[in-house]
Amino acid sequence: MLTFEQKLEVLESFPELQRNNVSMGRVNFHYEDSGFDKKNVAYHLHPNGNGYVYGGRLHDYETDDKGFVNIREYSAEELRALVAKSIQSLTVKRSNKPLASSEGVQEELWTGPNNESLLVKYEDELWYIYAGVNLESAFETYEEAEQYCEEEGFSKAQD
Image 1 (tube, helix red, strand yellow):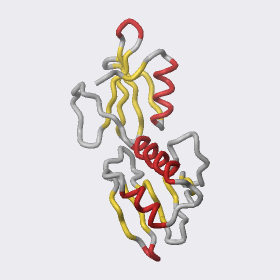
Image 2 (image 1 turned 30 degrees about the vertical axis):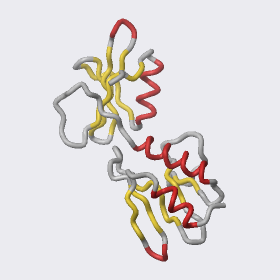
Image 3 (image 1 turned 90 degrees about the vertical axis):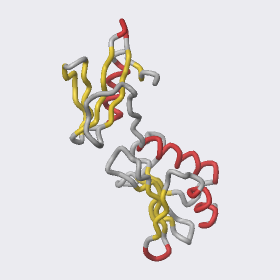
Image 4 (image 1 turned 120 degrees about the horizontal axis):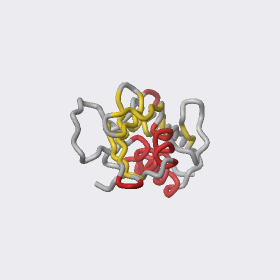
């Protein structure tokens, strides 16, 4: 088990995270560039060695009802991998294909058979999939939208 200081060292090695000291000596780390309402990546890291990392958008980790993974027994490598995956899960890649958009709207272009394309766009707390100007579908999570695109034979466009 890593010490509190060792866990802090791992978390502080991610420049995209901001440290926030909270009550009783605990520390949180926020990801301000999150594409979602969730900004806490590390939550209540405690001097006794306990703490949590957000894994609510990850499928390979056991989480509590708030989507957090207990990291008490994690090694440095395990912790680093989980934090990187957590950050990636909260990052929404913007397409380089410009579209009239307002602040906070994320979009991603997917290409498929016969050079068809779909636009996956997050707005108003939903993921919308457009084929041209036509709305194909809407989903509550990015994973559902991603699964739909993949099932239809589409893949993320390379920027």
